[in-house]
Image (cartoon, rainbow, N blue to C red):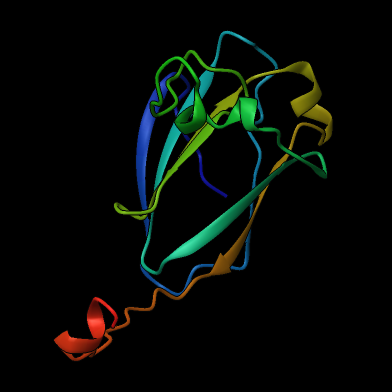
Length: 131
């Protein structure tokens, strides 16, 4: 458990092997309070976010905002997120709500490790353009 001051942004780094799932809760009943987390992952992952056991729709992913892709801010709704695979960072907004106080409104992130492959093919120039 971490204690954080509301309406602040925090950078976190997971030095050890990250967990397969990450559960986040923000115990504040005030919708005026929020926290923005920026979490560095030491290994490449694909993330699947859930809010109270239901997969989050793309409207929560600010990187897929049709107007302008962006990172979430302290003003965004609870559960807003963006994943930057090149920086290996996930950005998450947690916002206060009365439901937070009884264990609801929890955020879960399932992490799947990904492997990037590079392939080099050697083709003689005479076969490259065909006959």
